[in-house]
Every structure is written in C-alpha cells, then in structure tokens.
Length: 516
Image (cartoon, rainbow, N blue to C red; front, side, top):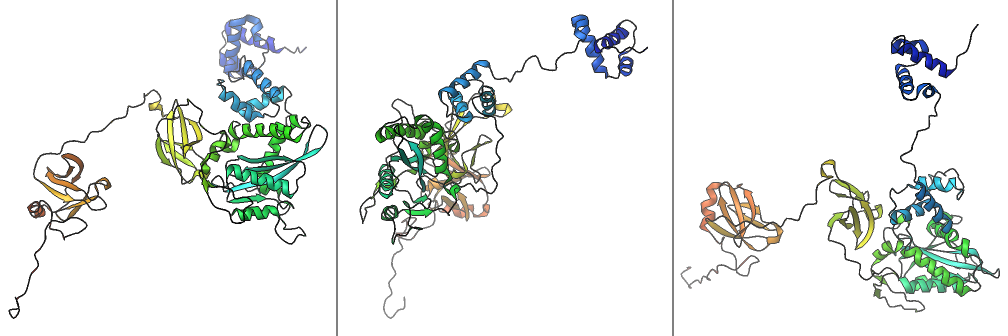
C-alpha cells in the first residue's frame, strides 16, 4: 500500500539520513531529487528551529531596504490632498526642496498616490513619433498666444482668458480675463503684455478671427495684425486644424485648469476678483513653480536671459524704438542673499553639455555654443548663463577624489631671470620676438613690448623687467648668435615706423657736374 508523505515529513527523513545514518549530502540530494544546497538549507533550518523549521515558508523577504518610509508616504498623501493639482513630479520636487532624505523617485511617488486612491492607475501613453518638438533658442524670440474658454463666474456667466507664453522660457506674458473675446479686449491684453515685458521678434497664433483676417470676409488686416506691424513684430499663423503647433500655450491651458480653475471656477463673483486671483497664480507660476522644461527651475530665471528689449509702441503710427532692461516682476535678488563665488568659464558643446573635472554636466541643448560659468559650492555644480542659473547638478568625483580635500588656490610667482649677456627685442602684434633669424613666442600679453633674450645652457630665455616670461629650447643656428648679440637693440628701424624710431640716416646731396 502506497502512502503519500508530506513535504515536511520528507524533509525530516532526509535530515535524519544525513545526521543519524551518515549518508552523504550528495547521495540524499540525488535520492530526493533536489540540489545539495537545498539539503544544506534543511539541515540549517532544523538546527535553528527544530522540526518546525522544516515547514513551508513564504518567499517574501523579511525586510525591504528600499521601501518608502511610512512618514514620507504620509507626507506625500497630505501634500496631494492639500494641493490636488500637484502631480508626482511636483511632489517629488517639493520633497527635495524640503530636504527629505532619502528622496523618493517620481515612480515611487506615483505608486504611493495610486495605493491611496488619489490618482487613477493608467497605462503610460507612448509619445507619438510623428510629433516634432521644437523650441526657440532665446527668450523674446517668439510668443504663443491663444484664447481659453469654458471659465465661469459665480453667477454662471462665461468668461474668456487671453493667454500668452514665451516659447523659450515658458514665462507667462499674458493671462487676461475678458467677458467676450472680441478684437478690442484681445488687443488690449496684447498691448498690456507688450508694455510690461517688451516687444518679441515674432508672435504665433491660430487662425481665429480676432488674430487674423486670413479667412474672414473683411478687406484688410485686423487690429491685432496692425499692432504687430506697428511694433515690428512678425505675426506667424498655424496651419489650419493643427493645434499642436501652439502646443506650449495649449499645455498652459491644461495646467491652468488643473491647478487653478478646478478650485476657482465659479467661485468669484466679479471679473475683477477672478483677475486678481489669476494674477496671483501667474506670479507663483513664473517665479516659484518648478517647470519640467526648464530643468526644474522657475520660468522667470530663463526669461531673464532676454536682456534688453525694445519698448512697446502701441497706438503710435510711427513708433520710437527704445530699449529697456527691466527684469520681469518678482525676479530681483532678495536683500541679504550673498553673491555666488567665482566660477570657471566653459563653452556648451553641440550636445548641450559642458566638461568639468573629467565629467560632463548637462546645460541644455538650447545653450549649445554659448559661454557659461560653472560654480561649485556645497557639493553642487551650478551652471549660469548671463548670471542666471540654468541647471544644477550634484558634484561628481572619481574614486581617488572622493576623500580629497579641495585644493587651495596657488598663486604662482615669476622667477628671476638668469644673469648673463642679454639683448633686447621688440615683440610683434602676435607677441613673437625674432632672435638669430628664428621666431620665439613670448605671448600676446607682451605684444609690441620689449623683451630680453638670453642664452642659458641649451635654452632661450625671454624676460621682462628681470622676470622670466617664457623659456624655449634653442631652434636657431648657433653660428648666427654672434651677429645677434652684436645688435643688442636690434637692427635700425625706419623713422616713424610701427616698431620704433632708432636711427635716422642723413640725406645725401649731389653736387652739380660731379655726379657725386
């Protein structure tokens, strides 16, 4: 009669065969159809916990070192409930700014929100390959403008929002609430934006009737086109039925609905109250809210790169072009903030990266070919363009540099020139002196200045005011040194020459009839 043995009983018999009968582990493993490591595991569990240690165990690990701590998860849930418009990226950025260590990743924050039912789990959409992403290289090169509807006051009246955004920096230049999106209110919003921020090179809009008369029955350009023409702005239009061309301002509409109008829609009694609340949100969006396209920096920091722009000439048929350098509101340095330490200069390569200390750091493809400054302080590498931080990275070290203290700056002192026979030569515009028919570089710093030349052992020593400025190996013909030392001040120069005025040759006269 066959009796089926349980798993615990089989393991127990295998252990007894090894411990009491002296059968080898290899033989027991072959008989029971397992590997030797499994038999050793049974022996270890039996020695630690007795017969109960041979029971089935869950494969779940006893601990998960990378699991998110409960206080951090509770903080994520509280931040989402307090700010329903914040997504995983924004919450992760706020945790990093608050100094939460260890800082969870975006996916970890997303999974925590899904576990608590604060966001719906959905499959990530793959980005369409036929979309072509583009961005202007500088601020004030292009504005995108549009009109957003389906916004309501407390009484149920619908209002429109005239929006505008800088293509490069994502800085909101216009967010005006109007009762009707007709030509005059839209153009008043445009003129207000031009007066505040200056004149862009181009403005991109769709083919709405308030923007263009391209498809309208009217005979001439609309008011929007006339304002652009009077201010020297090139007005660009999208292809019909192509909303992705103005994708940046359309994405601004989505952000506005999620972060502002979801809670504010229908809550304000008058247009003025709605405009005041919208202005406060726009100020936070421009100066405090991190933007993913700006490397986690507020748009105002990139918009500062616009520098000096032409002032708007609205309502004037012959506008006067002026320059103004006022930065956008809210971007001044707060009082008491110390200046950054001096950094090193770098050029951004074609891939938008710089090299520092043997490592590459991303500055952004839009800054390719531009000079930047890299400042290292407190373990962070700040990359600045025109004095504005465009990227921040954690400083990286090689294995042999991890525990190395920062080197102190060494001030090199010029050595005294070796005493000996010296001749003086005048450097040309490139900082090169000639000695014995051979050119020796002194450096552009010494261009058109006299330098001492002497032979020291097997080298040519160049000096200035008794200090060595450059040493070269001898490349000239040693047989010509005698002639070179015979002219300690160099060969005579023409009067009023570019190099000097040393010798004047007397004018010769010829006596009549003597031919002499």
